View 1 (cartoon, rainbow, N blue to C red):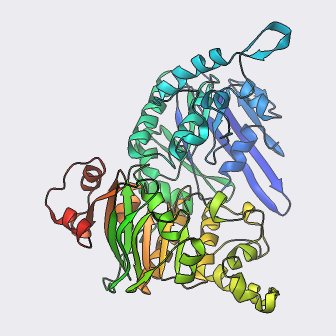
View 2: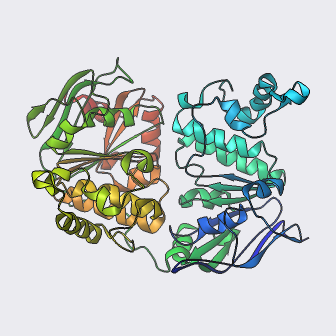
View 3: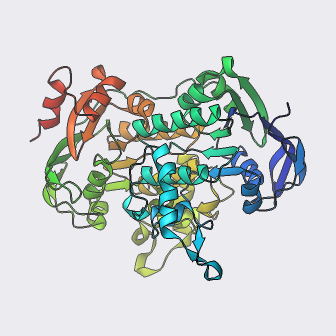
Length: 512
């Protein structure tokens, strides 16, 4: 039987760039094919061709044995191809049901063509329940967490009865529980004969669910792995052409005294919970916990996005008053937010403009921007962060996810931070770029900066941290030192189970 999908000899060129060079990929009915590769390897371009966004310069798309031409996204949907994109593609001013059936709304009243809202709501329920989303379809999307919005996008694709489903980083903002539910759904869909192309930088997930792995490197096929060959090392080798000798970089073990100290801090998200902890210079303190546990809200309170309701913040022994982000920046406390595209960068601006924006006063004596001074700062950060771009004048929107994250970090490192808070530092970033980000964070900590990381990637949490603070319902449930690191210990605290001894909980309250 012919594969349900064959992409053969696909070529695509953009001005000055060969994005795809004779790339081929196939998927059988009911097969999960993982597509891997570093950012810029050609995965997105290949999928945009399958989805009708781009037209190939050469090659064929064959569905169920017949060559087809997919000229638009609507064509792709008609052919039974559904997409779930990493960057959410929804309208948060509409309710869940309206997002689910956008452009496909059930109608009534004949020629009046009025939307049958009741029918739309009822038709939404089974798709949401399939993913364990026990939420009223009439709920406005903006009231949902990022993870829940991602699940709505998945439900939308499933509602289109896709026979080929492309999942692009579908778990990047999901909790461990939600990820398990999604992987179970993928397994269920495979059993129903749905073919799935699964794109993810989380290699552990791929090892669990993929029947086959196809790797791209520099716009070409780099090889593939059968079920019995799929493991972390083999996938890394195909993606980057070499072994990663040191993925996680250990600390030098020389921590300075506490730089940042929180005492009884209360946030608007969890006003009844008082949070206290110390972060030492020279360490990476990672905050783990379920989505909604209050980690990002705590970071935003420290940075002044949403000023704390109560409590004290001290830096190097001096109490601070933080009424807004400018107070935090002036003190040397910086935040790289979770959603780098929306709140970490101005994507329509250049690398130079983004890197120098927080320190614009230093580059504009007498109120006039000195382009030469900006260029010097930017070039220094491009070299230090190993940002891959044609020039400092490249627009950030055209960079890969990993390079965008480096620009976010670079703009703060240019200001010489005392405390750097990084929320989900490697979300949607390939394995090679992850290693570079980890090295940058460790090198920064080794200079005496207090580095605070928020992460939902358990492997990352256990790999990069000197200590792990686990949050639950707006409070710190416990703090683990490296000798007590384990996935079980972290998850027990996240779900409210007491640690095996009292050291962790004692550490959590030591500064109260």
